[in-house]
Image (cartoon, rainbow, N blue to C red):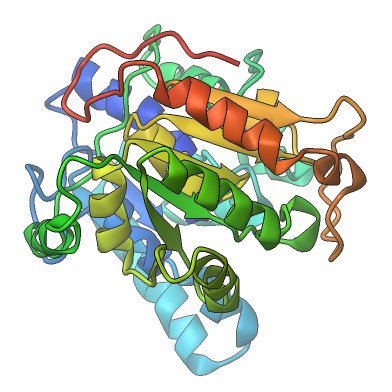
Length: 355
């Protein structure tokens, strides 16, 4: 499997690979990934498949961001050469490019494997010429498209399977300590950040939603990714210090997300983590299309203005349609979703998604 990043994209690919693992339990499956996302695939120190590595058998690291920043550095050439040697030594029979970029397709070809499988219309179209098998996908959501790609490896008809993520005992213990004072109060996790400004609903509106949820008995946690701490501070201030800011490791974020009763965010990696873990989600969408990369496989509500158009230009200002969504709209969706029976992480049945 080649899907080096980012967080949401890896989580979108995981259901397909999990389904493939369940159908072919004796296969040896490897994954090429950016080192910073390994916590989505393996617990710290995990060497073999099991609780610490539930889906795959091997991790291969491709720090492509570092390579891009120093493309002609001797260390970059050495690292690429080491990855190539590692893939050749592994002796894989097929490689599945779940990213569809020139970069990922090039990594796929490095292993010199006869079967290089990718989408007929990948995200970066020139990548298709590096595939030996081009699969026409028809699903609307990227998770459905990845299922179609994975089905092509052995001709299976794979169906959606809830992703299996690793369990880190240290992160679970940290989470137990953090939530020890919550009692029976449900926990809502709010994530005001997003990859770029056009997707970012104003943080002051998240603060109003947080206050409304607190009035209804929720304990509020605010996730802050790198450089997002000022946004979390706004929510904390507007809730008179009642909301708790979190600056977690990836393993800790997985652990805390397993325990929440509700997640509220825009189109961002932690939202897709909540979906992968079967948590109820309220998604606030603007320039990105939720029918393609919105919540999936869990209970959810999506808010998106009919005026919003798909646009992946990384503009700094929030998209106009996004700004038409009010805190009252989000709070109403959250309360309605919370009124349903909360999903349990250990439940095997996935309720029909709601839009």
